[in-house]
Image (cartoon, rainbow, N blue to C red):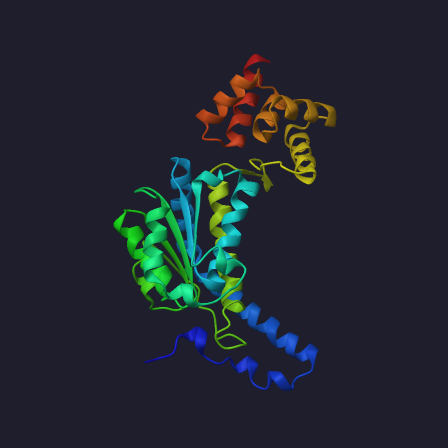
Length: 304
């Protein structure tokens, strides 16, 4: 049986233990850069994945992340950022990490082989048809992740697979398959390295494109963020001031009136009659701030 590509020895690693620190680090960096190149051919699949995820969230459904070990950590990292960055409620985010919470403090590998646990975790997540799941596994054959995929498909859930080996069970059975064709690791089998880097980039791309599709990004600004610390409050003020082209005092007043909702504050500062009118525009335009601002400008031109 052929070894998975992620288990093979890298030519870059030959004699790495005899190199000085600077040379060893250069080899590690070359390995990372080679892994990043795998993303270039994945744009079509990543686009499909982002649209599927956005559709589920837009319709009030859930986005579920599934993984084990190092790949699970990449999935966990992305999932936990969605609320703070894009304002997606945690009630719409599900996280199935093999053996959690125990494995989050002691990364023993046994849980990734537990298929019964995967089935139980899926059943306990209260997912339904129309929801979407992102499953991450370097080998593409991790028993926990593959069993979860099978159970998810029975429920009519769209499955997005991110894996570094092809063919593999996860990619073969996915509705949307993202194959990250990363080279062998500098440390053979240590998929927290190149494979993990490529996975994190792919996840970043899927979730960020999803955020754009949902209307939560405007000119590179995260206009649907949840401002729950001083830094993010300052960022919110800066966004309102920048987008609405108003002074800081107006931005503060509008943000306070909007109870911290950046989109509402921008529309109020830009000329919306009141909160009700601003909310109506956001609903009618699918939460896309740019379209709402165009409506305000259009009304101003008509009334001029």
